[in-house]
Amino acid sequence: MTPKPADAAVGHLLRELGPQVLGAVARRHDDFAAAEDAVQDALIAAARQWPIAGLPDNPRGWLYRVAIRRLTDHIRSESARRRREDAVATQTPADERVAAAPDHESGPDRDDTLPLLFMCCHPALTPPSAIALTLRAVGGLTTGEIASAFLVPEATMGQRISRAKASIKASEVPFELPGEAERASRLGAVLHTLYLVFSEGYASSSGPALQRIDLSNEAIRLARALRAQLPNDAEATGLLALMLLTDARRAARAGPGGELIPLDEQDRSLWDRQLIAEGTALLHEALTRGAVGPYQLQAAVAALHDEAASAEATDWPQILALYGLLRQMSDNPMVALNHAIAAAMTEGPAAGLALLGALDADPRMAGHYRLDAVRGHLFERAGDRERAVGHYRAAAERTASIPERDYLLTRAARLRAACVSPGNVNNFTNPHPGP
View (cartoon, rainbow, N blue to C red):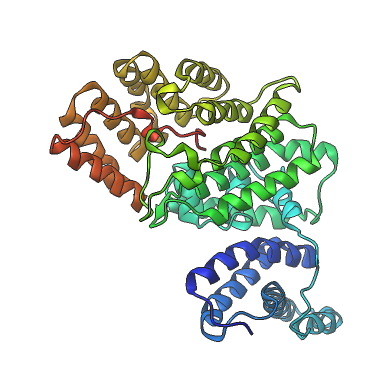
């Protein structure tokens, strides 16, 4: 055993190891729902024991053995209930040998996360259900966080995930990477899932942390693995480019106390030029492959922000044109929101406010804090401080992110005291349009 770790360190490690252990257990037993339950039990046990007893020499092996033990108990219970004692007697010795393996053994060595990703995006599921299930199994997000990303109530999302697990079990899909044709049919859901995991890591939807670096790093790792599997797919390359170009700004997004620093106020010398160069090269590669998709367009927006020497030098007319193309591809309300921001930066705040009006009737945006946050910035830019303060406060009440709430309240207080000049709307420009 190693020295006792801090709770935060344990949480970080468990989030990283959870999908790996789930993949290994699901591959061994071919029952996703039961495997997930067993791994969740193992993670809970680790969260309780490791901060007190210290980390085991092989944390992944520890989790794997405990999960296998839980799953073996489940199999025995089910078999007894269904009067299958003979089958249980045949299976038990192998399972007990794994459960009793010494601490240095880790079970399967390979990383099963990518097959797990594709299994969760099986055609038996609707795309929203596949994405939600994968965010739970691979991304490690809570049901509440996934509900926030999809703009639906938490109870609705919980039901969707439960139905998805039942469908996976009923489909009896094998745990393996699908063939080329089937892989292509699942790719859209896989890309969108990785996108959402990265988005939650880059800008946490809830809690005290502005960013969850473990999530964004995992999304980038999986995007790299996916591109290695599909090197000629332009959108897989475009998504990786988008992640790298966006993640390059991570170090400049938060102040010493973790407070949010808006894009126009960031110290651009802190931006990671190596990631920007890699992301730009990937974007150029993707754009030469023919049809242009939404991830490539979003990567192009991120590249324009990264290439600007200052906020004032940003090529907003070109960003406006790119969001116009994105709107033609999708009715995503976050795309429309960012299009309005780009219009305000190019044509003035009145143009942006006019475009925001169409979003008031969209039920997906009802009560969403970002709509009020953007309105606050546009009214501030237009010189209407009273209305700006009202929208900032409304947004602060609706966001579950503490750093964003604090930023919005601070902005409102400063405006109320008339201590600042009108701000820049790109404080809340999202480099990616959301789910």
